[in-house]
Length: 143
Image (cartoon, rainbow, N blue to C red; front, side):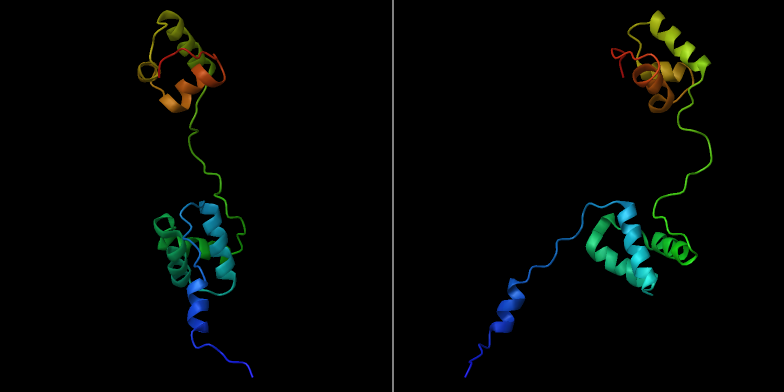
């Protein structure tokens, strides 16, 4: 005859470790969770509550959960953002390249921020891109 210990249930529950909250995650991963749960019929408020437990402060907002649930129910299957129309972040024209090149040749110790302000262009978008990355390939210009 087998004798059962009364503390078996208590021992099992104390040895089971809960999964650590997912502090680092991408928006796409969270959207995949929303897609999965919404196809199972889980309501957006419940999806957000469950995600908030796992993702904490990195969780998408309730409004975003509602928005993505609606998108998935309307047939959208991609979890990535759609390309947006509007002005490009980098506007590199031949005139801009010539202006930057002339400024760098004239004032060798020019700072990219000052040059961008003088030429009325963004620092990280156009000016830095022209000087360092693609066009001039100058590496000794100050940032």
